[in-house]
Image 1 (cartoon, rainbow, N blue to C red):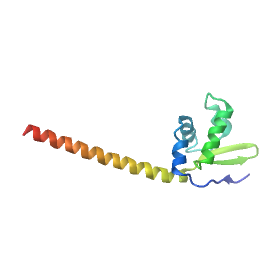
Image 2: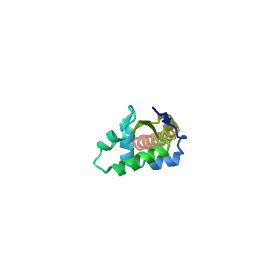
Image 3: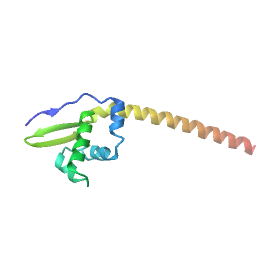
Image 4: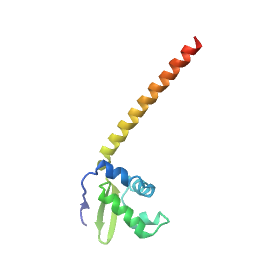
Length: 117
């Protein structure tokens, strides 16, 4: 059994670019909680093997996915640790947007109270 291939944590811009493709997001969801073979992953989609292979290669090179070789099989799993920085950035963006939305709703509510008085 060969060791898992380790890739450096992803650059956030690269990770966002890789995840902009819906098929790659679907693949990441498939391997989020369990290791899956390349054949299992390819069989889940109605696309050619080369297309699936290319998506796996991009996910792996971005650091979002780990590959482990067992004989001739390649097994893939999500690199959850690598997604941590991405989660932090997205959470911060979400919180800023929620803050803006809260302030806008409060301004609108104050405006409504003034027009009633």
